[in-house]
Image (tube, rainbow, N blue to C red; front, side, top):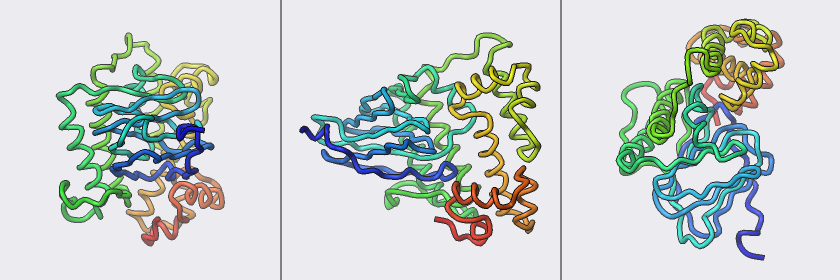
Length: 298
């Protein structure tokens, strides 16, 4: 059996609500295997060497200057490409922002895999954005964010909503710069993308409202089944998954910025059952709501 045929190490992915980023320099033998897939998105940007990423039935060879993205929910593994001496790359696990799936859409190679070679004149700015992403992930929310550059830790986890949102801004710049040449505007005012964006706006405006697939579909003039299909295809997640993520983000902000009880935070975020809220919050953030408020975060 060749090295390519050996099973990789089964490594769990971070929870979808976390932003975790780093830069690696790996040699032959480096392999990561996730037979259950990941609940978060994985973004990789190769700076030297080659990597091979497989998800479901699709695969992508990552070379210098290429962004390869794996959507959640499909078994995947990745490794230093056969014959390559190294794979140097940046990586980020997170929940993709609404709209990124539209930018990545023209770069799809199948099974939630997106691969794009960024224009040469964007490489320096993309590299700088990743350095900033790593630094911003370490921000405490007070004072100025730490400076990017020499002395950076190789891996950082964004704690607190301010650090997460700032880090996602840097990653959004990466995605936009890399995909700008592949991005195509929706073909007309009645495009499906506009309806999906409208549904996302409704969710973001009031995540605690009693939204359902039926109610959101009615607001955008689609049947429930058609709406669910289009929304999932355009965003990479189902409408109810997107709603739950928005509610959890809203709950995290309330815990960080208010003195509301956990029960009131749950209700204000659209979770009628505090028990259910505690369970799903812990699944996403790694700690129960009370511990999250106290700063006990993984």
